[in-house]
Length: 113
Length: 111
Image (cartoon, rainbow over all chains, first blue to last red; front, side, top):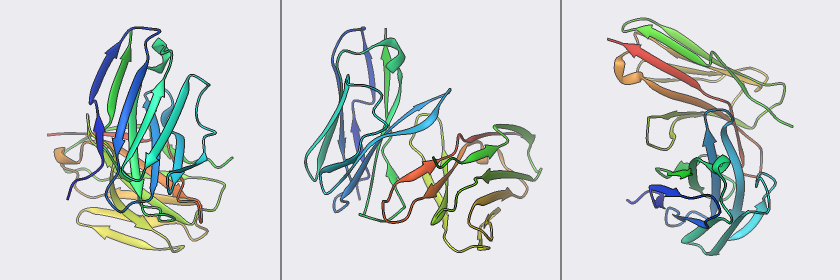
């Protein structure tokens, strides 16, 4: 069975550019989570969706970050404009609604120059 | 705000040694999970404990959930180089599916 799929795996961009990260959750899962991981701050929850509806976006650092989930099999996290401090590994995870076991994708390593 | 504190943050030991990683909070969690993450990959679930005082064993790894469901420990017996990685504890918050992650413990096991 396919796990959580993320693309791209690596992204290098220049400050000010728009960055779009993509996630395909495990089929049948109806909760989706976006995390950011850095050495300094560890794994931080940015936003999560239940049944494609954003439930808690309190972890989104600022208005430059936005996330959408147009259907059950696809979600995007967009940063516009990007800044060097956004450099991190971004993970997407999915689960069955209400279950506390989350399955993580391989992550997108983002470097903003 | 619910927080989980892990200790130690870094651990470097020789193959064959035993170790314990701790995960503590002042908050009660509905469950406590342990994940292991290898470089370049996402965290992978090792175990979930849900009952206060629960102990689970996974080969050389022993996981315990505190009686009050506020803390947990991971004990590794006779560590192997393959145990090297980042260990993360995560607390479940009832009915939301949301997890609160600790900062992680980086374990290095030298051959």
